[in-house]
Length: 480
Image 1 (tube, rainbow, N blue to C red):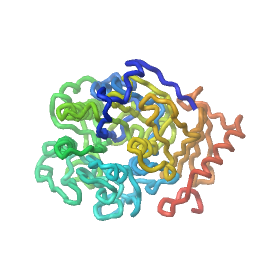
Image 2: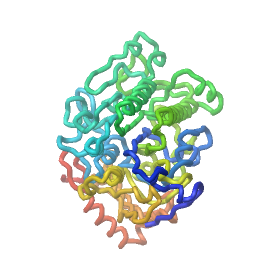
Image 3: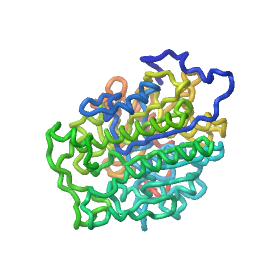
């Protein structure tokens, strides 16, 4: 696999680990901002031109921008399961967005080891602010049972569709929001991402006061599906900038209102742009808080998205070229559904303005943080540590292959090995099919080469069979 790095900013010498005094630095804080359904092309540093993301672009200018990073899979819950457990979607415990009563999705099983457990053991205080979706309160996947000291936000992905939901969770305490009741016009109460942002900033401040390193996971709901933002200067500056086709959705009095339905929106293009710019504003506030607290220089900042861009709720990824040059969207295992932005900045360790086409994935985060803290080996995971490439050092391991599966739409699989990508569609049908692409020569996956490369198809099919371990909770193949 390729390991080319383009240096577009400071020299690698700037990535020295010393703090200048010869003394070892304190453990670095870690902030991981995970956008929801943000496309590869929805950031300025990945080519977006219709709106701006200066704060996120600044992370890229100060760090390393990956151009071949893959999410866990192509929808939220299993992608996050891969991320927090270091396992790919053929091994991970949660493999689909399955809704369960009373509120939430299929939980991580008891005994699951997560990045939060690792970091707690390393002396970190851990927090998650945003959308969880890996187990409702009291279940085996409750955030507090998964190594999270402080959780604030949406426990349930379905209810997270509403940006003016009637309640959120503070650990295991339900917080009812009186100003988001049916008596208040929708959009005039508390915008949930604003509440989450306030709590996230307070978490960092309190952690620093306590003198503890912190890991803050920030799985925001922006810009997932429902298109709505507070009436402020951001949206006012964008209305009238784009052609618009109003979206008619689920409004007050209709079934599904505040329970998963997406509200109507007269200005879907402007609102989508305003949501991403609002996320960029939140990112700038997080960076500003780190600087205010005096810990910015000893904080690793990571930015990514959980999967490719969505098309629900009036969203129009084609208008914004949200998937960049890649084919497909959320729920596809083509590149557009699983290739995501991934940026890492760490002052004194990453040389600014770096770009790499190194092939990596979400399940690499856990072994990376383990190496950072000198912890357990990565033998119980599918990932590899990215610490060498992040710090510009030698010795970076490479993946032999990456595997993806998706439960819905008849079942889908994909394997990436070097330049080759095999896609398996309609798995549970008698009319399943395989498609083969050379990503280096045909990055947009327009030319199916399966017919003339039967040996390569068989090789990658063998990897699919090896990588997929049956899970009785999420049967994938016919007969499982």
